[in-house]
Picture 1 (cartoon, helix red, strand yellow):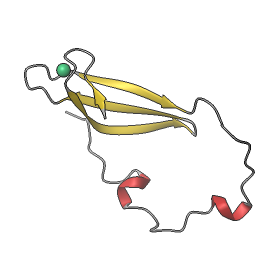
Picture 2 (cartoon, rainbow, N blue to C red; picture 1 turned 120 degrees about the vertical axis):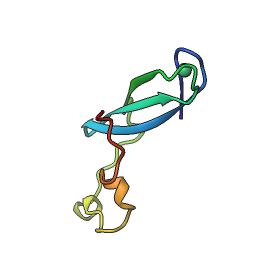
Picture 3 (cartoon, rainbow, N blue to C red; picture 1 turned 90 degrees about the horizontal axis):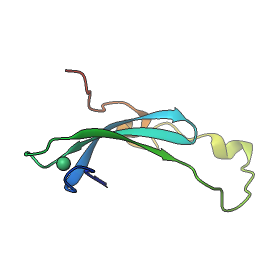
Length: 80
Ligand SMILES: [Zn+2]
């Protein structure tokens, strides 16, 4: 959870978009009704703490392993 940079209230993440394998842009909206600020954040991998070489099978995630929303479906739209 992020806090609003304008009023410091809790902000709700409305949706997010993968920009690359290591970077995600998230869209937030302040929960303070008197503020209502919308803003984006960037989240990215900063450092790798170890050097792992996964096997070829490790890259295959079985279908249905995660909820549908984890695959980018059923996310909230920001269109007006
Ligand atoms: Zn706010």
